Amino acid sequence: MMAKVIIDKERCKGCGLCISVCPKRLIILSQGFNSKGYHFVRTSEQGHCVGCLSCAVICPDTAIEVYK
Image (tube, rainbow, N blue to C red; front, top):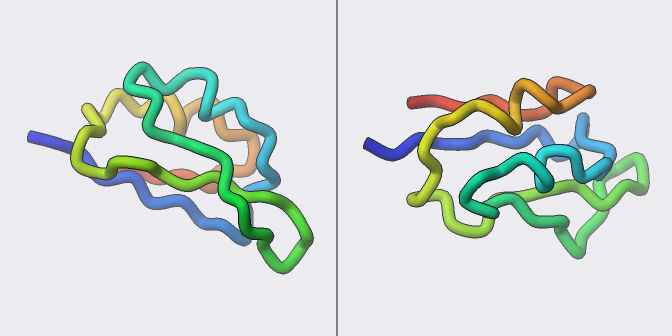
C-alpha cells in the first residue's frame, strides 16, 4: 500500500531537508513561489511513496503530513 504526502506550500520555506532524506527521491523543489516568496517543495510521483515519514519528521516547519 502506498502512502500519500501532503505538503502545505504556505508553511514550507524550501530548506530542502525533506529532499535529502526521502529514500525514493520523490520530493523536489518547485519552480513556483508561495506567498512569502519561498520556493516550496512538492512530490514528483505521489504513487511511489512508501510512508517512511522521514520527510514529515525532519521538516522544521511541520509543513508535511504523510497518510498511509
